[in-house]
Amino acid sequence: MDAGGRPAARGGTRLAERKAEMTDLAANRNAAAEKESTEKRAAGKRAAEDKAAADSYVKVKVDVELRGVLSYTEKAATISLGKKDKWVWVLDFGEDKGMRGKAKALDGKTVLVEGRAILRGIQTESSGDKLGEFFGKSGVKTEAFLDLEPKVAVKSLVAATKK
Image 1 (spheres, rainbow, N blue to C red):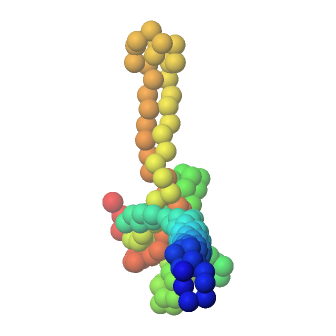
Image 2 (image 1 turned 180 degrees about the vertical axis):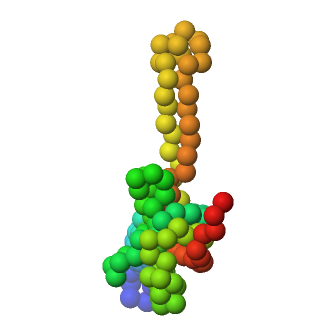
């Protein structure tokens, strides 16, 4: 018994149990708060990665050389290749006013343009006898070609010489 007439061991044990409960409760609250914080950071990181993935791309630029007839208007300059304007490419001079003046002077003439175009993809086209393919005879012809955006960032523009 203690000085107050109570059993000493029993009161001390109860106090120790209560203190242990409070310590466990605090530890559980801290663990829960830390878990919630970690989950929020992870969710924020996933959202940032998703946004970055949505904004990601690969752009392939290809050097091109075009020979054809130049057409110049105040709105745009184009070069036509092939018979009956089979392919028409838009010429992008950027802020180069000198190049625009040269294009205006060469309007209606055959020119040689060097610049860059953007590769949009690679296309394939098949033609031929599908029945021959069924019987193991190669009658189908597949061709692949580059699909370029028909717009050229012009590096040089000159009057073409006769070939």
